[in-house]
Image (cartoon, rainbow, N blue to C red; front, side, top):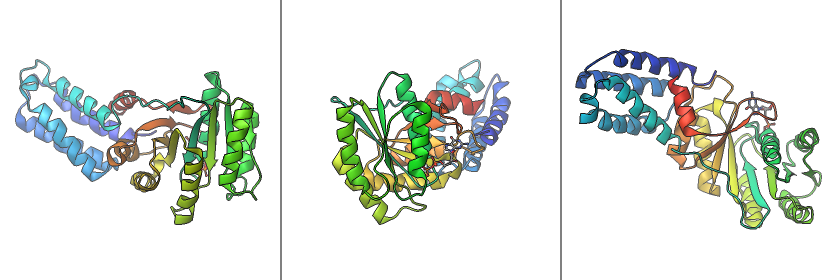
Length: 296
Ligand code: GDP
């Protein structure tokens, strides 16, 4: 399960602190050394770790902690709050266009989970009584169009497709028309991914962006790839002004580095997480709940 190693490590650190009636500066320093190592081992970006530890230390040496009857608990609480902050503080909601449809552009590398996440998001919106339209804009990966059509059929959400011979920019343009005609209030555009970021991909994404003026540009990243996911996010964000991140495959045994670093490194909030292949395995990302889960 995700974060397992980190949770165990942190629990060990905190169990030593929890029992203490008094905590010395040395106890705090020792605990912070161990938290630092635990985060690094969980593949959290080293700059993020450094900043995190210095913030926690700053708060943990204060009077409040030393004078408390349960100083260990106060420190755990500080770590919990800082972990929450690190992942964005509060839940970051999906944007909504003042004039429908709300356009959501899904971007990311091939295999990250873009197509399935598009289906999951459509399902979530449909459950909230919206009328989403899925757009098959990944014309390069064989089977991506078919995959989206199958997903759409399963959840009874229309899929706009023009095959693989029309440019994705044109597909996006006509899809917006279709959404207006059919009163779809959300348009989810599945775009092409590559195995690596390249100029042609970015150029096409920029063109779709310019044409559709999306309310959300969601980067789908595979949490299992750790710091690579963070690098991908940084790269996409520099070129495309992301509005949010979807972390996929949190059901796997990811060490957690991506979840804990991506907001701090890119400034982009994590809006959703996926925890499985099933269509209802999409969750709104709550930083505070995730922090509590990590602390076990
Ligand atoms: P795309 O190339 O980015 O469109 O990726 P796909 O949507 O086709 O997903 C790639 C693979 O990852 C598929 O086999 C998905 O079923 C799988 N996948 C996507 N999200 C998750 C998830 O949250 N958990 C698990 N276990 N598998 C996932």
